Image (cartoon, rainbow over all chains, first blue to last red; front, side, top):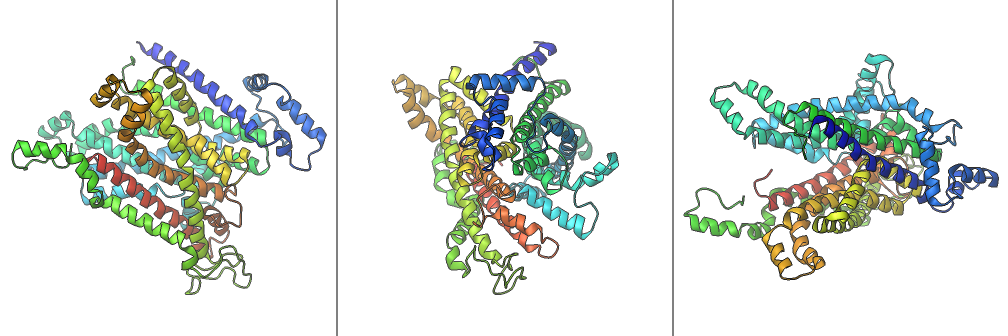
Length: 314
Length: 297
């Protein structure tokens, strides 16, 4: 099976998942207890407003045709009208997307920068003191609520020593880099335990491989051995682990954007929840799902392109 | 690899015999597994403290005392008081009680549903497997926090919604793990023997496969409870969790955030409590994993 066929196959596999994602997002409205329109609009809703929403969402039609209506609008880029702002939800979400994407990429880079050295330190002397210390990191890290870590970082590095702003997005590339360091670091800290664990294990496997023994017996210096042989072969599993946890990475931004007041779609989601702005919450949920599906696709494709050992027959 | 097939044991025969008995012996010596023991002790202390909260503190977690707001830590108020004069240590203990109770109940349904569906998918394969695994793909397409928050929003805040949301999202991991284990185990001789003996599929799964694969799900459940506690605390932080005034660690952190510069203890200690619970459960999970796979770190 050639490269093109692999890409096509992977794209085809996307279809059922994408359809499933839209079905779940569509069904959100039917999880609302009672009459969705009445519940969303609150007790002071006029019968007319309720009737308008009913017609807009097609609630008076059978389920299948409701879904068709939803999909027809979706394919035209229409996520419905924001109940709070009275503008199309699509525009609101697209305007907020850059900040979220920034945070996700920044956090992924920081997570790698934090995890790779720590995993190398641990793997370089298995069962040594340093290994035990690094292995304790995930034990403590897994139980840390990300928003709490964010608050503590704000207290320590933004209020106490004033190195970073307390909140906000900054302007320009340098401004983003500076203003979003703490939020990105917070997400990275939440992600690091999982990555460190996987990376350490994969490095230990690589260290046991025959080509490493060969390189050692040839007298390759330790530093070169680690950088050229171990790291290169261990990074692919690390990228895979990041890929598997991309949902966690992206989901973490919902929480963190609200702690640091970053104008991304995560903040939009929580704000819309408090404004009971159902179409926007629904739209953001869909965009998050699509984002994860696309990033996973990208990871799979680049993985196949980067690693010559990946074969295209399955 | 068993713990006892070490070089240095006298003669091949005893070594082999010992290796054959290694698994049950390891199971019997669970109390000598340091990670597992320390995790169990730690969790025991936390659960006991949370359960005995009324005995450990004289204060009521929801009674306000506007004459004693934002007091610093002292002998009378170990962690001080919050903005409406409630004792922080008391609320911490009762908050642990709330969050631990919800997390331990919330993990049960996903565990059972995921294990059942995963073993069916793994054992029978075919269209059952295809349909279930596609469903898993769809659910994991959503970021965990996003789906939980969205579900709790549409269902309305509160404990019942948390259970439903965590069940709808959480079963997939168990289904994946158990399916993978069953796929391997069903090719083993004992399953083939049971099958050629004419036992029904249901009986083979329940009596022969599940006892052998369930440990993996239990190990995963430890980290899953941690994740559920984080979700519950996060929902509480956003005001979507258990409604006030019921003490909850997430809403405590949120309340304390407003007084961060002057009363850092209000935010720090509820979070630390979550970290310690996470540590205990992670230790238990790691210890259990070591017990069934000795040597693997």
